[in-house]
Amino acid sequence: MSNRQALFLNFDIKAQPDEVTCGPTCLHALYKYYRDDIGLKDVIQEVKSLKSGGTLAVMLGNHALQRGYKAHLYTYTLNVFDPSWVFVLNA
Image (cartoon, rainbow, N blue to C red; front, side):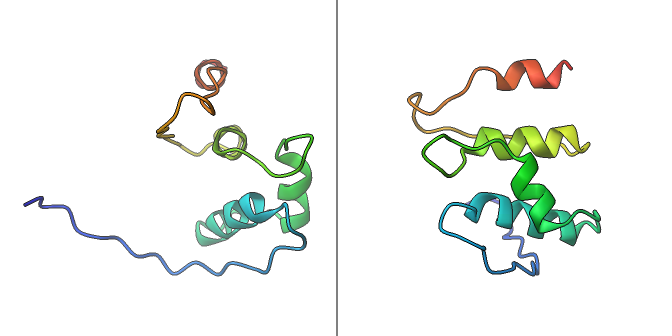
C-alpha cells in the first residue's frame, strides 16, 4: 500500500460564465488560492482556446507557466498531447 495521502484544498470556484470556460474558471480558482491577483475575465481572455470553444490542459498549463507557476501534465492519449509544451519550459 502506498504512503501517499490525499490532499484536499479548499478552492473557491466561481460559476463559469458560459459553457466553454470551465478550464479558465478552474485555473482562476487555483490562482486565487495562491493569492495571485488576476480577474476571471483576464484569465478567460489570456488563455488560448480552441476554435470550436473550450481549452486543453496544455493551454491552461502554458498560462500558469507564463505566470511563474510550475506545472506537470499527464496524458493518457497521444491524440491530445501537444509537444509544444517542451518549448515553453525553455522560454
